[in-house]
Length: 288
Image (cartoon, rainbow, N blue to C red; front, side, top):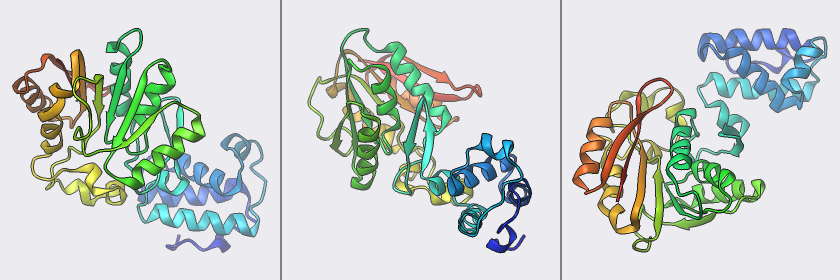
């Protein structure tokens, strides 16, 4: 298939035939989720659910749908993440709007949400999500604990606009604040501080490969060894935590030992690292 694909390949073609062609192209360029991605892109262009695509495979693509499908397929073949093409990403039980101003929420980050819900107070709590991006972590927590006061911060005004749009569309209670990590946070004001900060080593070649090429660089890496953002958070965490409060931070699969060392050096106790579903170090936590 030529790149970009010609709309003529799909105009007045059957749904199943169009999906077969798109799947073949995506399988060569994007990997094993090719059929799923083809169906999601066609759903985006046509409004036909994946179920209806399978139920009516003989339905033919009109010119407008074929043109849009070819354009979106071309973007994906060029490596653009499907979440940015569709403008949405599922996280927890939520469907979130995402843009190139925000990191794409990933399933492994749900461990941070699960841990916060498990370790947080049973009654009221003040929860802070640092570097919120799309608002994924904060909104997931708010959806499960409506009696908690949840605040989300980011230093990017564009990211805060996306988080605000997600909050308003979902109708969840969430305070949004422009802040560089904990700089504007009052002393002893938080029962839980959560963050998925940038943690990829600045020299990691993966930053210039695949989906990562399209995501905001400052949301992926702080430069140097990848631990700079975690150090910055830890430098101020004890000041902002209430006695007994928890700090929970996501990090790379190979950063668990380093994160525990930093947490201990910052004076936190009950320091531990939790594994994600793949068995990899993913979240380190500690208590004031």
